[in-house]
Amino acid sequence: MKKSDAPRVVNVSSLMAWTGNLKAAGALDFTVPAARYHPRTCYGNSKLANLVFTNELGRRYPELTVTAAHPGGSNTNLQQHAFNHPVVRAMLQAPEVGAMPSLKSATMPGLKSGAYFGPWVFGSCGTPSNLSAIMPPQAHDADLGRRFWAASVEATGVQY
Image 1 (cartoon, rainbow, N blue to C red):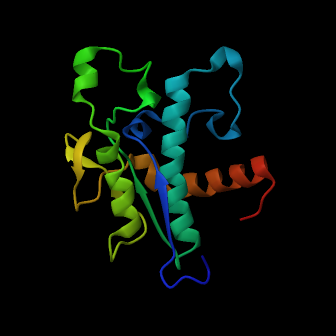
Image 2 (image 1 turned 90 degrees about the horizontal axis):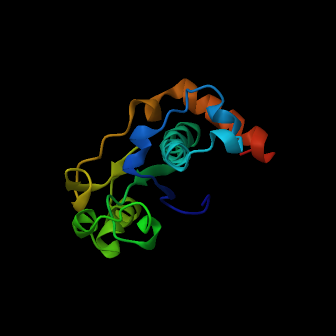
Image 3 (image 1 turned 135 degrees about the vertical axis):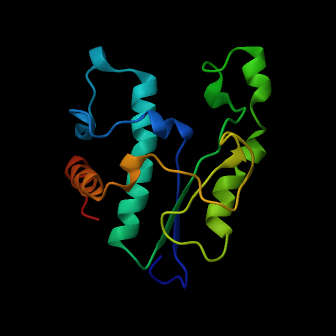
């Protein structure tokens, strides 16, 4: 990336980031005892973490353009157990359409770090807008970003 004229990082998040809470007690220890494990809670936290990381990476490395995208409601096998109702499944978009925000984040000229793209219809389906999607407030919290970064370094043993 250092040799690129315009290095860009695209992180994939989800609307479920709005359900995340990385300020909750123990959220940054990256371990959840089996008795407290809940898939939606962990998924929401992980998708919020992607946005916190996006903004913190952009702050730490201003020479990079660091963006994020969410696919909206896409009819993939990832939701095979989550959206079983036929009416809900019919509202999900094709995976190819869900990939468009990530492609836009990767290729749109002139983006600044922190740009976040997703579908434009109710934020969950359709082609991505040229306007940045709205991130949850915790995604912009610089102190949380620093603490998340430190916890990541501690958990992985890798200094970035």
